[in-house]
Structure formats: structure tokens, C-alpha cells
Image (cartoon, rainbow, N blue to C red; front, top):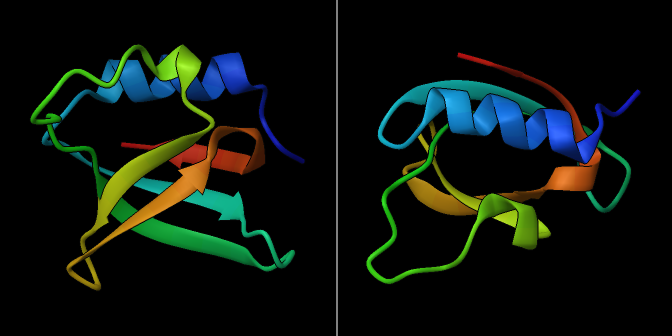
Length: 78
């Protein structure tokens, strides 16, 4: 069951930038994925998390940029 978008945003804000966390979410194809990730400080202003539908993160295991939809988050842990 997905957590409310507001709860996901609150958790991400408490973790902050440049800190590792694990997010579990449902991909667009319905597959559940767990990702070790980190939000990086944006080069230019992107607005508040509340305005984003998807969060860009660095996938720490793949070394590539990925994103997840805030409305698909199952859990977030630091």
C-alpha cells in the first residue's frame, strides 16, 4: 500500500540532500522496486518537492540517475 504523498515528502525533507536512503516504490509497469538512492542538490532551483510528481535521485547501486513518482512510494528509510 502506498504512503500518502505528503508523508513521502516529509520523509524526504527530513533525510535531505547528499544522504543515502532506501525507497521502495511501484514502477509504472506494476513491478515493486527497492532502490538505494541519494538526492543531490540541484544546480538550479526546481521548486519545492510538493510541486514535483517524480523525484530525481542517484541510484547508488547503478551509478545512474533515476526517478520515482511520489504517488507510488511504499516506504522510505534512512
